[in-house]
Length: 146
Image 1 (cartoon, helix red, strand yellow):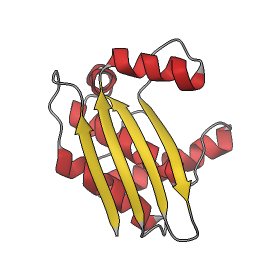
Image 2 (cartoon, one colour):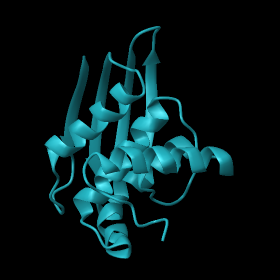
Image 3 (tube, one colour):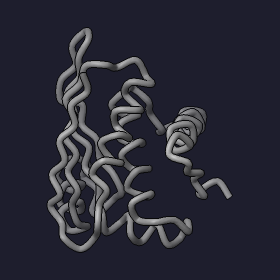
């Protein structure tokens, strides 16, 4: 069973809780992870900036952070943190809704929890392919490739 809890800590942007929850579940199940407890925190840029400084020594906000908190043979526990402010800005650049951009962030974070990385060009290309695959299940095509 894949349990997903959502904590919306911002009020400036609407969120689609069901879509975000389904996004996590589709990615993890698709990657063979069927036992997980995942929390999603939706924050503003100021909070994301603070988290980046604290955990990554980056002095700027980012789109998404993910933390694998626990991993056993058949179970994972993790957290995905997304910035709704960042999503709203980026969505305009890619001509889709902020909710679609947040879904991309949740899919991206879930892929990290499933073991994918995007630090090297070939790994980033593989992760982008997976993002496209899972976004397609929602009828979405990312425009960052154009």
